[in-house]
Image (cartoon, rainbow, N blue to C red; front, side, top):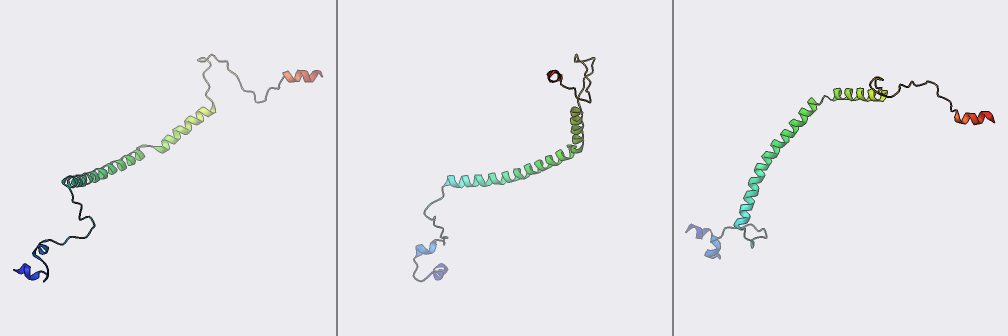
Length: 122
């Protein structure tokens, strides 16, 4: 019939029934059912994983924005600066609550007496 008229003049009937296949070099390796199932499973997993990844990224961005808004960085810096200034200025305990004797700092340094005695006699 019509299929015979469209075929090449020297082609056999068996050659006419085969559809043309692309030449990829892997015509001899058949794809097994297990390989197809693994491929379909991986394809489904990538679809759900991409949706989960987008949702997770949105949550992380929202978390960072909230932490930045609620961090009060300027107030934290002021508190840190005030505490370090208080500690560096010197913490003095009340004399009634500590057993240490109160010592007053002299503005002038005290001269060394042990070396001066031997120096004065000679």
